[in-house]
Figure (cartoon, rainbow, N blue to C red):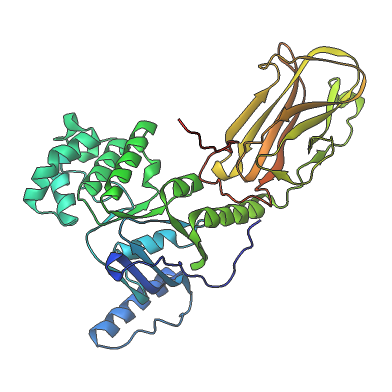
Length: 433
């Protein structure tokens, strides 16, 4: 398990020249007020202080104020992708708003070299009364392009957004997906030096999201840098070189994306599901509660039949389900659905002995059904398993829901596999041809 780092952390920098730095964030802090009246009053105070040439008391909190961000420092280099991760309320979107210039920090400064394009809310800056054509000119002008540059790229924007037939219709007649496509197309065709991306890759259908990902890879090869916010760790892992883990407005840890995402997932899972012991035992059922076969336990065993407390990626394991059989039955099968909690409980493995042609005849007494997984392909994380014991055609004897278990990286492992969705056993070799 990754040890949680509670002290202030900063992003480690690779030895690069200062000329490669396109975005520099130095000791940035931002505070907000939870009381609307006080917030308005403090705003007037600050404006008057600025007009009178006075100094704000930016380092202290006034009544009802709190730090949304505190002492954030990092550099972004040309062609680099940085992921921001953290729970809701950690300060990710606030930081992006500061970087995009929408709000000012109370402390510290942000230095930008080159053109910056924020993809924070696609289509949010469009005028609903204007047509798509008019909004392209207005939006890309705000992002720093001249009229001639917009005309040169206009057809590419329309083709990418796939709204040619509706380009002269008011944007208020567009669907949310059409507006999102147009917003994304406008931003990326400004050829920015820096892209700020806040969850926008989650919009649109699968085909459009894949198209956006390919375009981002293309412009990154040309030197564009990214800062990406996404609640799906897989998106951060697939795009970003390094990551920053924000917690309660501070940098909890920063560095290699694999290590930071793993720490974030472990913190999240421990908070949400608590400890995981990788086995369950169920109390016996009364006669009137039983359907004839009752699940008594679920656990994992090793090659020697011993129950294992720690489940490691890549090892050979037996997934076992104990049964209390009250009378003989024929044609019994069992199935299990495994879901990944870090991927919004997405089903990652669905096993069914009937599909594999394995039906069992059970006799009265205690028995255990097993399925051998010669190489456990699940990546490190916390999972839930739903277990069903069934007789054809569709008579279900017993069900266990949300059996939680964790998968770890082997202690002697020298590699990281978090960039993959599953573990693939492999052997490397070199042959003469």
